[in-house]
Image (cartoon, rainbow, N blue to C red; front, side, top):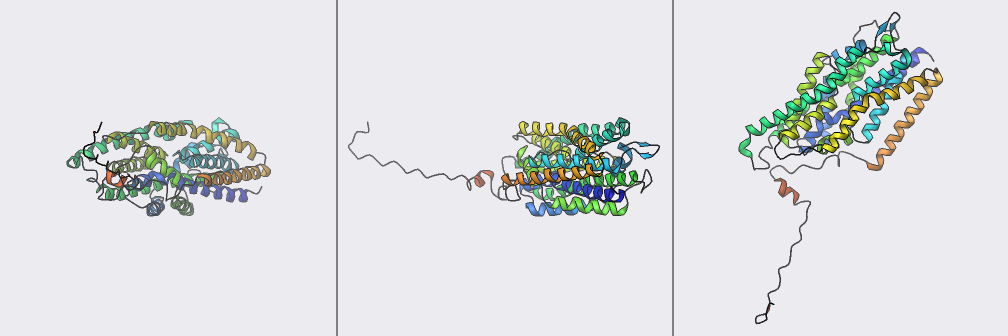
Length: 404
């Protein structure tokens, strides 16, 4: 197969992965403000899309980590070919779609890393992967970042409720935090653009370096930045309502004050990691923050069963995407017919997942239960959905009759 055709095919696949990353991770910024009623669902995802677009232009440190840190270079250049990058993207996309179908907020980042690592090992051996960099900038942040974000969110929630303690016992007294959530969730969306959009930029840059179209160590060209920013913004606008449902109401009941605390903690963690070039999972950070905020609010409860299923998804993402990427690489190494088989199988799997999702469709209308109307207590709001029949009074006994 002509090298130019392979490069075009891989770029198209990378941008499709960027699109899936967008709708897979919309929930990171917008699940909690939608759950609390701070923003309407469609307005929330539109705002997230715009801020993801802007955030993609703010930094390229994470892109450089992917294009020049994870895959080693040899005497003939980077030790991975365009065909192997194609196979790695197939692994990442398939795993992203599977977890989206089940509403699991798994890591698009780890799916991408797993797919690339699995394909690289099959095609170029274990020496092609820079495992110290993988541990330092991928694995360790995956363990530390969610825990850190959770602790910060717990402390921030405690602080928010302590500052507003005069409203204790008044269900709607902290409704003003809804306005703060507009700012904090916007900050998360902006930080998501600075981190996740860069991962696809790094993959395309790695592709161009492997094809000797860019020198080793190069950063992403401007056209790559623009294309990736647009792809993730369009994906974000499409919603990802299944995962919004899980983060918005599946882990804990989110109130405005704790939503504000969770989003602020998520944004701070992601921005700091992007500055250091850590390619962490924004999904794991957001999930850790939501759990921390649930633990921080007195009377709240965390649904540990859901949290456990999410954690299992986190653990499985890197190896599962790696296995799919490795299998796709084995097929892709057969030559043009292998690339064709990979493409056809990937399209069939994705089409099946979309068809399967229509059996239990989740949209902006049913992703998160509507929050209580502002100015109305939770108990009063429940009267709109719980109908209580009036009980007719007992007839008085006739005078003179013995009640016994």
